[in-house]
Amino acid sequence: MSGGENNSYRVSLADPGGRVSIHDVPTDAFETNERGITLQGTTFVPWHRVLRYTREVTHSLGDPGLPTRTEIRAWVDDGSAAGETLTVRGDQFDPGPWTADFLVEGAVNVETASLHLTKIHVPWGRVLEYERMFLPAVMPTRPN
Image (cartoon, rainbow, N blue to C red):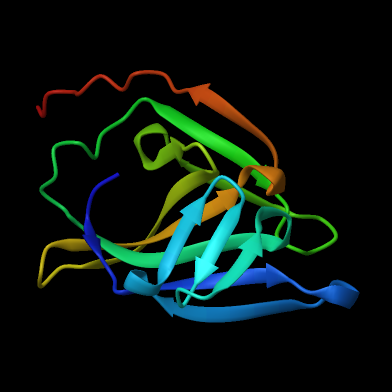
């Protein structure tokens, strides 16, 4: 997963009583490890409380890596009763050691020829399941 990186993470944490708290943390004050995340260099939060962390990124529309023939559909616990289903192209999914990472497409900026994306990091304890789906190849047609 490539692209320009924003300078902060938005962290969603499960709090007592079913509440969810949101924290904005600069990237240089955010760390992950095998037990959880560290915020602001001093606060440690174990993985079982982390619902997800996200950051905004951009992609150049001229990137040759944009075409793909696979999709990932994941069902994740987002703190709601039903959970959330995320569907991304196969090259926008990264099954990392502590989190499943998704690049979710947002808006297109035609003036700068860039694509705005949200990078979502979901701890494995919050991934209910994911499925890799192979899409049929699309054959280009010649104009008449």
